[in-house]
Structure formats: C-alpha cells, structure tokens
Image 1 (cartoon, helix red, strand yellow):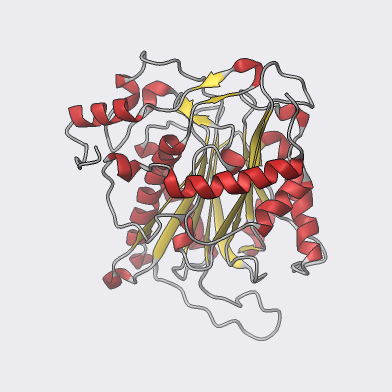
Image 2 (image 1 turned 135 degrees about the horizontal axis):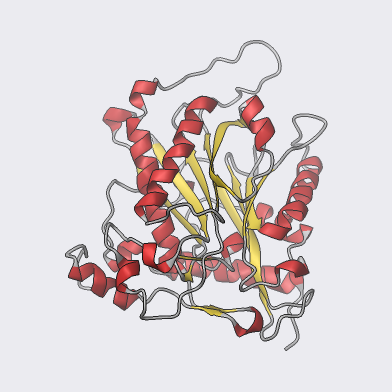
Length: 384
C-alpha cells in the first residue's frame, strides 16, 4: 500500500484523536472502582492552563523495511501554561529506574524551573523532538537564556514501529504544539503512546486527575502517562490480580520497559516539594503491579502552575508555598491519579498489528469486568 504523506497523517491523527477523546470507554465506564474525586474531565488538563497536543503516526503494514515502515509512533506535548505563555513553572523530577531518558533534567534540578513544554516520544526520536522544540521556542521568542534545554522523555515502541526509520520529524513536533488544547485528552494508541504496550497488552497514553477538598486547599492534581511497562502476571486493577487471572488466555507481549509519568498541580509548591510529589507517582505505579524492572525507564516529572512570574530577573519574586505538613492530600491524589491514568491507557488502547505482522492485543473489556466481578470489585450499572 502507498504510505500516507506526513501532512495526511497529521490531519488524520487530529481527526482520530478528537473522535477517540469523546467516544472511547475509560476505566470508570467499565465499572472499575477508584478512590478520590476526579476533576471535570478526569485529565491532566483539569489543572487550569495545562494544554496537551499529540501527533499520531500510523501507516504501512507487513514486513519491516527500515526507513519505510510500518510506522506506529508519535509525539505528545504537555504545555504547563498553554501556548500563550512562556512563563516557566517550578518543577522537580525523579528516576525510579533509569534505563531511559528525560533530557533537560540537569538544569531543571539545578535551577528549579521547567522552561517550556514536556515532550514524550519513542526512544530513537528524542533528538529530533528536542531540536524541533528548540526551534519552536526560538521562533516564538520563548527562550529564557541564549540556549534552550527542553525536557524530552521516551519509551521504546520497536516491537510495533519501524523505530530505526526515524519517522518522527520536526513538523510533527510543531503540529503537536500548535494543536495543544485544554479539555478532554485522547488516550490509548495516540501521540507518543501510539506503539506502546504494558502488562502484556496494548497500552499507550492515559490520564486522570484528582480534586482535593476545600478543607485541604481545593487544589487539583493531574497526571498523564506514557505506559510501556510490566509483564502480564503482575497486572493488578483496583487490587484485583487481573494479570494472573488472564495469564494464559491470550498471547502476551514481552516486557521491554518503560513508563513516563507527568504530574501537574496548581498547589503552590517549591522545586524540592515537587520532587517529593514526583516520587509519589511510584506508589500509583506500584498499585497496578509494576516492580520497576531492570530494563524499564521509569522517570517522572512534576510541575506547579502556581507562582506565576517567579522567574523574574529583577527585584524580588513574591512566592507562596504550601507547608510540608499539608502535602499529604497531594501525595494521596498523585498516587490515585497515577494508578487510574495507567488503567485508562490500558483500557483505551486497541489491538494493533505492526512490523512483521506482530500483533499486540488490547485487554478484553468483557473479560476484565468478569474478573473484577469475581472479586466483588466491579461497580455494576445498567451499561455493565
């Protein structure tokens, strides 16, 4: 078959992403129970100002021809204050297991600021995404120094995608940035998560949020994941050993790492506190069964949209900071939203066939509900 042009792929991706964000079932739709109160769209964009954009690249089929395809990949961009602002945000990062990459973290650790979007793509496209991000910042006048050190993270999609064909191009990064929006976020086989799988099933992009009660500040925590980790036997959904129950029922994909987790909040936190928040994503990951294996790049970043203008170069910045003693609700919200974002990624994903006709199946929704019901962990409704 004739491969689509990059422009055609981008237009198709925008249409498909919008459609899927409205129609795909999510974990709660299937009756999976979770703790905590989500925000209005149960996504990272529930944190005011945050925008998410994606470019999804899907073309070709059959035998792998390096440089030609099949292509099953993409790029995701998370903009903390949206396209209309170049105001940095306080941020912190954490590596649970470092067999992966997240660029720009040396300066983030040193300076305490995230000076632009967070990008997620496939392992061998980190360089082109980084370079395109720099040019986009130059073109928009968003540089804060004479140089730019963007944050770009990755997971490996080489079991489905022609990863050594380097199909992510600068225009795909720009399309994700220019297409970034607030509101509902597409999940599953979209953006950087297009060719990913987790716990032996098709997986990819997932998101969730939590609204903290007014007594504890009324803050919002949002999480977005690119999930590509874990073996089938480890999978747990709301505490249920789903992976063990389904271990031999359907073919399982091998585990080849990793997961990237992005945590956003509007709570006024300093960089050292945001590193603490990023660490708590580990607990949400563990709730889904992961042991963070040797081959997994499990790398997390957290940022706060509070304290606008903190990066001013003159005078004194007037900052607010939540006391450490009041952070427990944020820790809890981060763990909860991370857990749900991963399960949303798993449930939204669809069976995909990639290079050399390698197929990774989606988790069967009816069978999942059956297992959850067996353990009395399914929220029954007329739709179930």
